[in-house]
Amino acid sequence: MSTTNYVTAETFERLKAELQHMKGVDRPAASHAIGEAREKGDLKENAEYDAAKEAQGMLEAKIKQLEGVIANARILDESSIDTSKVSILTRVTLTNLGTKKKVTYKIVSENEADLKQSKISVTSPIGKSLLGKEIGDEVDVEVPAGIIKFKVENIEL
Image (tube, rainbow, N blue to C red):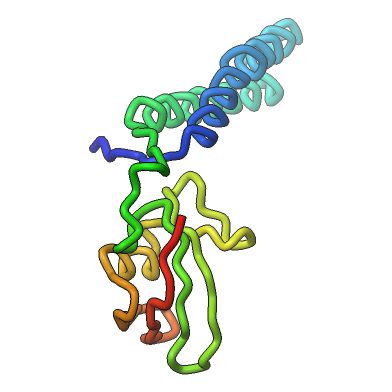
């Protein structure tokens, strides 16, 4: 189940640095913790050893998952993005037709989503509903609270 992860060059570099840190700093620290716990005696009743082994297993799972994300990453070039339609990396201004409030979201990959920065995932209900829409289009978005109607006001980088 390999899915392509579309990311900006900045996010790709951040992911690589995070992976390097896990391999170069966290992994040796986990091994050291296991070694120290092993020296404390009987492994059958050594909770510290069990905890260190479990932490190492979780770290290895995170490393494997991050390696998969990086292996399937495709770096997007903002200069080649068509702003006539909503796509990943476009900034979309919407009007909520129910409340008449305007909101602006940047459509990003799951790895970059951060609602505090108005970055929503392309796989979120709003992100999915907006893909391919043009200025003036009205969109019905199904969210847990019901259906929200938006009108696409502007699309830019």
